[in-house]
Length: 251
Image (cartoon, rainbow, N blue to C red; front, top):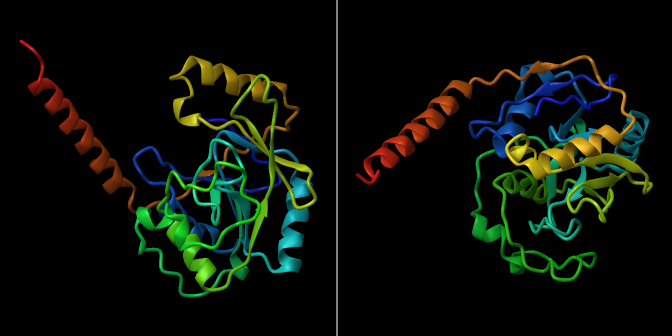
């Protein structure tokens, strides 16, 4: 997808994650990039998501600043029915980070395994978890980053959500701000856009109905010194799969 749904009064940068550079790697790149060093706020936003009102986003920033919240986002588990990740950490589809409120000396190298993050016994019980969400069924490497923030006493603001129109669409979700007002809409499944007809039609229908002010500023790519190495690794994996497929062709 190449949609641009960031409001026109926000600068836009993009990270090419097609070859494996996403999650924890993207967080490290954004927070350490010389291109972003002058920004007090960093917003991670998936390409199939849209900010509905920039004024509400600014109000969220003011609330985070006043209440000392370093991070705001949707729980990766226990909030959205089809997301069964760890509820102690936000999903990166929309995540606002205050650079000024981040602790110093952040270590971006993963320390804990996926097994640690999928075991609920390693965490305190969360009252707001919905039924059948007490087992964490998936894990993300970027949990390590947010876990370190928690260990260094950073405060998290977890937002709530609602379905956009569940009778027609079982995926598209609206994220609510701290006042319970619509802030972000996320269609999910961008990875299969133009590959899966059902999801492509669904995503197109969602954004076709919205009255969004399209940002004509296309932004710029965030410079990534590791991009070439990840691209080469990706091509190498593709070549290995192709060779393996050719070797096992029935004759």
